[in-house]
Amino acid sequence: MKAKIFASLSVLITGAILLYAVTDFPDFGDPGSPPNAGVPGGAPSASRYYLENTYRDTKVPNVVTAVLADYRGYDTMFETVVILTAGIAIFAILRVLRRDDAPAAPDPDPARTDHTIDGDHHRIIVGTTCRIAAPLIQIFALYVVAHGHYSPGGGFQGGVMLGASFILLALSGSLRETLTRFSESDYMRMAFIGIVIYAGLGLLPMWVGRNFLDYGALSGLFMTKGEEMARSHSMLGVEIGVAVTVMSIMFAMFANLSTRGRLRGGL
Image (tube, rainbow, N blue to C red):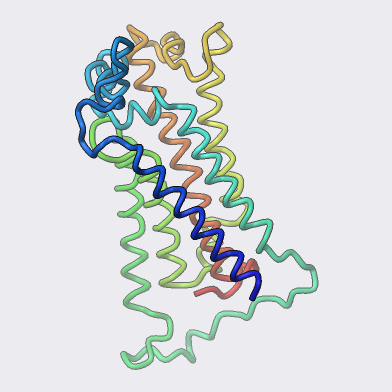
């Protein structure tokens, strides 16, 4: 009882502080606010600079992608690390690794399974439809990742769609069957590979004396005419790294949460 009272008071106090801080924010859409107009007598606002110079700097027409993967590259990289950390935390808390666990029950004999409309035990219609839809979802997800430079999309959105396609297969069939296609070792390994891809593209410029995540230094590696196109190509690599990590951690969270860390049975 005391714990509930303490938790309630903590929530109320924190909420009151946050609501009080909101009064210092500028009005929504105020063109004269510092984020929109910059500091009087100082540098122009960051948003104005992004809108006016994104294509010149990066040859990327999508301002959102340029901000996330280039101008704000540090922030996005550590957002991806946060996702990885969340997956590791869930694994550390829930995953059951015991040698004395009973083996999983075998699949039912297909000959004894009721395949009538009233007894669709194997979810024939749903399962077949989802197996057909999953590759189509994955192809569209890859399009979203690759086309994030020019339209809404990118690594986070495409990664969620890729992860959702595996979750769909697990929900419509069985988690064990899905794990044969995307095993625990596979998704844990790929989660780290995505971070390595992102950080690796950031470390490469440092080899030639440039700053971390300064993609323009990779113009020689990508054989581009200018640094702008090198930044554009590097952002595609960044989006791929983000998508790989998000996909892997999303499916890892589902697999562990739905089975209480045993990776058997599930929803």
